[in-house]
Length: 301
Image 1 (cartoon, rainbow, N blue to C red):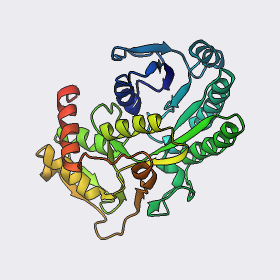
Image 2: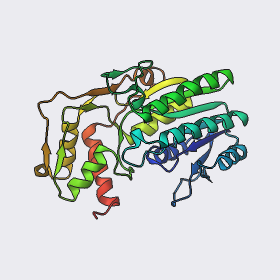
Image 3: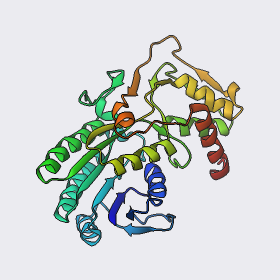
Image 4: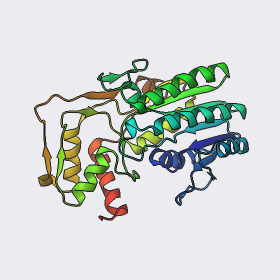
């Protein structure tokens, strides 16, 4: 049975992926968490507690588990301003260290949570090998991907850079990204202003993201691969959908409606052709599910 080790398993992506991965009978699943908060994992998942900021704990946990496959999702994205935060340098260092320890303990398949930020924001459709990151977060993600690709090639390890585009859905606990921020403000019956309604971003529902990730893990796809919907949706349309789901249309207003916006969406050719996966959740249904989760799980403060 293949040992699969997931870091960041209690995070937004990690929790969804871990739940779905636990259904795979051919995997023995280990889920890494910091232990700072109580986390529920489904049956068949072995929780592993370690502080990834501690080099000794990182080394020890990989020596104990000796995973065949590692899905490295951990990275600090929980604070506003993370795109230019110096913590990205720390996580680049941590990730390289963990890759080295993974190799020393016989690891065979390493999958990394990359980002659309590796492409920057100056192109419309993001294709592999068109990377032009413009912030420290994207630069650090891309730097790890490039170094890891070469390191894994030399050491006969399969390496995959899963480049996630913006994600939304139930389970996102932080108010860092646009959709949860809009939901939080509007459900408190406060005005919300959309300042760039013509910006078009590629949003993907969390369950689609989890299914795509597990499909990639099972297919052993190497190199960079985009995980997104392949469609850019104007932020104005997204916020109108959020407001409608909360019956708060009168609280939503717009600025810069006549200004052309940026467009950024994923080329999902590899995801569709090599993995055989296409997203299936439509935006309206996905946002309605997200709003229902917030209403039932997060009381208005």
